[in-house]
Each structure stands twice: as C-alpha cells, then as structure tokens.
Length: 474
Image (cartoon, rainbow, N blue to C red; front, side):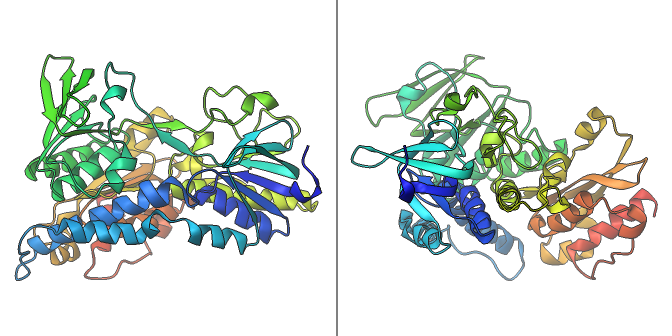
C-alpha cells in the first residue's frame, strides 16, 4: 500500500509526448501528478521516430529541391556524417535529462521504472536495481504507454535480428544493401532516407498492390514513381515465407511466396505497431490485454465502471499519431481536473471531435503526402453522397516558381448534401504547408460557399485551393 508521500491526485504511466501533455494539463488544473517511465523520457517519437526520421529526411528533401532549381546545382552526395551528427543533436544524444527536468519543473514527480496497474487507483513500479515502489492516486490513472514495432511471425525473421524504426533512425551507418518490408509511412520514409545516406541497393517488398494504402491511390502512385526514379527497387504483392542470416553479422536472405529470393546486409521491418497494453496490469482492473483500450470522447476507459482510468495515445487505438495522442492528452488532463474540482466536464473543448473526422498526417517522403479527413473511398463506405475534385498542383504558378517541373496532385472530397469538406489530400514537394488549412476546413466543417471567400495569396502554391473550388463549380 502506498504511503502518504506516494499518493498523488493523478498518476501517468508513460512519459512520451502524450504522457507529458497529460501531466502538464492536470498540473495546470491544480492537481498533483506522478509520471512513471522505464525508458527514455520523451518517448519513441522524440528518439526513434518522428524527430530523428525528419532530421534524416530533410537533407534529402532539400537536396532534391536544390537539384531541381536552375543555378543551384548540388555538388556531390549528401555528407552522411554531418546528417547523423545533426540527428544526434536533435535527439539530445539520447540523453533524457532535459525532459526529466521539464517534468519536475511542472512540477510533477518523476518515477523511473516499469509501472503496472495493481488494482483500482494503484500502481506498482519495478524500480531499477530491484524492488517495488507502490503509488496511489486520488482521482485518476492515465495510461500513455504507446506502442512498439511489430515483428511478423515469419520463420527465421526474429532470429535474423531485423531492424525496426528504432535501429533505422538511430544508426550512424546505412548498410550498402538494404531490404525494407512494408509499404506504409515508415517503410517509404526510411527507404528514401537510408538510400540517400548510403544504402545504394535498397529493395522494398510490399504485401499490398500499392504503397500507402490508407491514402488516396494517387498518393502511393506518385511516391512509388519517385522511389523507382531514385533507384529503389519496388516489388508489390510479395509475402515473406522465410528469412535467414548467415552467422552473427552475415548477409540476410529473404524468400517470398512467389519463390523469389533477395539478399542484403540488413533487413528493416516496417509493418505496423504493437500496442502497449501488455504487462501493464490491465487484468487487475478487469480489462483483457488483447487490443486497444476502448475509451469515450473524454478518454475515460469504458470498461472501468468507477471512471478513474483513462487511456490516451496509441493504446486506445484511435490514431497512432503523436499529434493526435497529444490532443487526446490535453482533453484528458482538462477533463480530470474539471471532474476533480466539481466543474462542468462536458464543454466542447473537453470532448474528442477530431479523431472521428480523420486525423491530419504528413508522410515526409519526396514528394510529401499530406492528408486529413476521409479518402473518397472511405467517405463512400461511410454512407456519404460524395464528389471528389482533383487538380494538378504543378499547374499553379506558385508551385512552378517554387519547384521547376513541380509534380503533384490535390484532391478535395466533398459531402454533397452539406457542401462541406470530408477530406483533402495534397501530394507534392513541400506540400505539408497546405495541410493545416485543410485541417481547419474539415474539422470546422466550413461550408464551401464560405471557404470560397478565403482568398489565397498570389503567387503561392496555396492558390491550388482556388483552383480546386473553381473545379467544383464555385
């Protein structure tokens, strides 16, 4: 049983960006908080995913843009050592002391160790060096335990010691020969990044018939074309049947279901994530650890009748995106504080509206893939009467000025009954800056007739908005 010094208003298990945001909001709301983390404070995103991957990708993107601009020809290959040095800088050389200091200045109590639920409003922490520290919560426990890379059950794959996003984003030496398994954002981003940093023979094996299957089909097509033009070898419709590694550090051989064989120095598996619901004590509060923790729009776990348990980020399965987990954490923390102080907890700002509409996401490949809301296929499957409007972004003078020979495409998915946007997709160099306007339009459900009066500046790529609305008929 926790003693008086180990009882807090709220306990947060997990100190990635999501858990940090939850702790910050409950403290801002006048509550005390303890945050438990066994690994690096700052989480997967800051050390092995979002942040380091972009540090590796942006030099490639800049080199591509400079190479396309007359008068600014790029001389020589990318200097890999300098790129890795910059990556190490942005991940604080894998030192989390800065994040720990930030937590403690909130102020929150940081507890290093593996936290597990030990019954209602209780957490046991296995601390380094042995022993257990028991914590108690007065109002709530927040689970923000994220996810880890999933390794498919393929004979020999685990024994071959494959890379995941963790090794790919933390390496200082790209293998000359690389096999990438998967066709999603991580596979696309890291195949391009490592190829530009020295993986001259990069092979991507995709189980599906296209890349980025959760986006509009043209997005995957444009990325596939770019990968192929850069020298990356793509194979679609391939399923692994066996993987072997020769010796401790020897080459890796991959066999596919069509009998083809591929050999490389390393294999990168990018086929999804395993939710962090295992071995965190869910069974002690009556929840089976076999999938996402179901939550309501306030992030309260629906399976716990007393309403003290919350789950934010990857563990609730709503959206495995850092920015969406942080959004959920802000809602969750504010709701907990409101309920603890007896204030209204049902204000519009205290309910999740963004997840059901479709989260914004950027895939930082060259070209970038930027999307929010529903795809055309998803909108139709959800029962909407829709119309999709497309436009060639390269036909906008601002895009051509920015990138000579700009190749890209935009699509708006319109709800014909309400005449609001259900989704938007932009694919092209430096297209990410177009996304937040689309996110506002989709989330706020702005009528097209009103959106028509949001005049884009000339000459910028954002004029694609005007072209799209004109194509629709406004």
